[in-house]
Image (cartoon, rainbow, N blue to C red; front, side, top):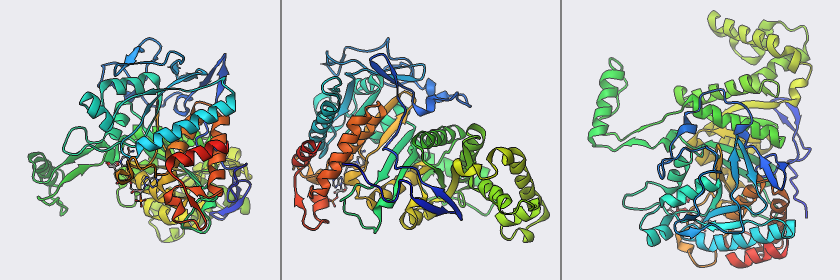
Amino acid sequence: MSLSHPGGPGQNCTRFHRTFTLPAAASLSALPVQTRGAARVFRPLSARRPRAIATPNSQVVASCSGTTLGRDNKKSMQNTYNGLELPKDGQPIQYSNGQFEVPDHPIIPFIEGDGTGRDIWKASRRVFDAAVEKAYGGRRAIQWFEIFAGEKAFRQFGTWLPDDSVAAARDLRVSIKGPLTTPVGGGIRSLNVALRQILDLYACVRPVKYYQGVPSPVKHPEQLDIVIFRENTEDVYAGIEFKEGSADAARLIDFINNELLQGAKKKVRADSGVGIKPISIFATKRLVRYAIRAALEAGRKTVTLVHKGNIQKFTEGAFREWGYEVAREEFRDQTVTERESWILGNVEANPDITVEANAALIEPGLEMASQTYRDGVYAEVKAVLDSIGQSHGKGAWKTKVLINDRIADSIFQQIILRPADYSVLATTNLNGDYISDAAAAQVGGLGIAPGANIGDGFAVFEATHGTAPKYADKDMINPGSVILSGVMLLEFIGWKEAARLIEHSLEKTILQKFVTYDFERQTAGATKVGTSEFATRIIGNL
Ligand code: NAP
């Protein structure tokens, strides 16, 4: 059965008064694969071009063992982790010189997860194994290796995140996890955040697309087919906060009010909690670079920088500026910014147009601006025509990836009202958190929302939802998110045939109306099945 995306393949849509043809709906996380001998070799997107900036992150030292992240793993593998021996029939995925090598029997660590994670993982693993067997007839198989985190780890080892679990995720490179409880009453603030920080998993990748038969609150859920790239290391995830009433909060407020804001009317109230929101050039550029490269690889035609730069100019606004810089400086031949497309389009519509008239079209009301401002826009128009008039003019820009930007609040209505206009969103941490849940709701909700956290040399795949504890061990919950996270993993390691099989049979099972409670309550005539039976039916449909 083939997936159908009426809003995607070959569909013409009007965008900003220009007409584009959307590419065929891209797979969940298309990454190119080369074959080297028996092993599959691929380079992660971020490794494919030399870094433009020094990479302090590649020298981050893992807290668990004092070894350097991002190094080759060939020399440092342990035989056991948490007292468990590595599977004898498997080999680790290797990473050297920016390339992954995937053997036919890769050892892939999994964290079962807390609460409903237990039911979901058991069901999902059966689906993965059956699809790989069906696709490769025994030539390939995943050797699963359990690593412990969360409640299970706490019960067995007295710690929420054993050093060996982090070491295994690091040494074995590519892993998958179920949702983890956030421990209450102190300890690690969030296990998920800890894993992301230790492995420097800087890109949270969340594809959002529609599978036929899934109940949706919107009229045309099939028109939404986007991948969200959410910066994963700073903004609110930097976790720099000071509690109201604490000595540190008082010192910081005093410094801000009496040093930084000296003489200004603006003041921070003394009874405030304070959070710091860092947005750096380094983290912004590597995230946007990754998103643009992924768009190019997957044939997606737009990358939208989502920000709140109208209010927070030096953080969110800077994210926008640095994002455009990456596009212009590193992907000049393959991209066109929205303003550049307007300038070039104006010349195509009227080859004799003057720089001044062109500027007036791209900046309505320009005639009322100051001379300095007007001169700036004239200079911009001239610079665009001088630099890319030849290479991108005469319609050539229409074949490039369009880089545009949207204010965060506007994108929420845009993806509902004009979903087909968007393809890849690159955004800061908090914006990405909100947008990905809202977008997921349009195509069926958290039960079917996969994700991945990617760094240079590491990847951890995980569902977007939490542990949903009220359904724990009831064999009720929808395993779709973890199953689709596994689809992303299979694509990431280049096992695309198995990935496609799972997607097709998941969709077929939903169309047959055998669904878990969350879909059943919204689907007329559906039969409610448990987590395990849903997986069994997917396997039957492979
Ligand atoms: P949650 O676990 O995501 O569950 C909230 C609600 O979402 C559920 O009650 C259920 O709604 C729906 N839902 C979630 N997963 C579903 C699935 N697989 N199938 C169908 N419906 C699903 O959020 P929470 O209750 O706020 O968080 C519980 C715990 O999870 C907390 O400890 C939190 O810290 C942790 N958490 C972990 C992660 C992670 O590990 N990545 C992420 C988020 C939260 P209905 O009741 O309406 O059916």
